[in-house]
Length: 100
Image 1 (cartoon, rainbow, N blue to C red):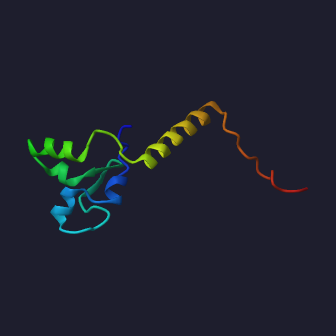
Image 2 (image 1 turned 45 degrees about the horizontal axis):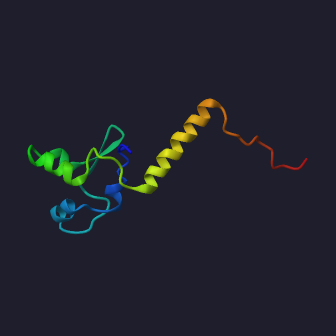
Image 3 (image 1 turned 90 degrees about the horizontal axis):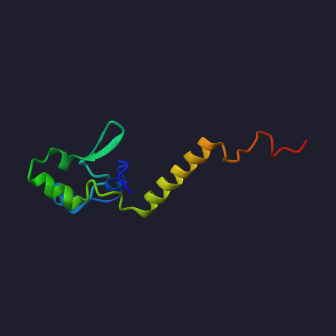
């Protein structure tokens, strides 16, 4: 699955590069930057070729989300959007649980 830019991977743990660069375990990763509603790796963004290509490969940038929980939530969200667009999601009416 493509990366959705949620930043979960860098909030949850430090990669080896960040651990070495920052010298300890600080969460979320201090290199994590937010821009235009997405999260990016600041170490990758500031690097120059050919280091940038090596970092991108090593960090899996552009290769999709490795977290199964996030993938499942994204797929569930997509399915819900499809159902809502079709008008096929059963919605609870207000007052359904009240006894008159």
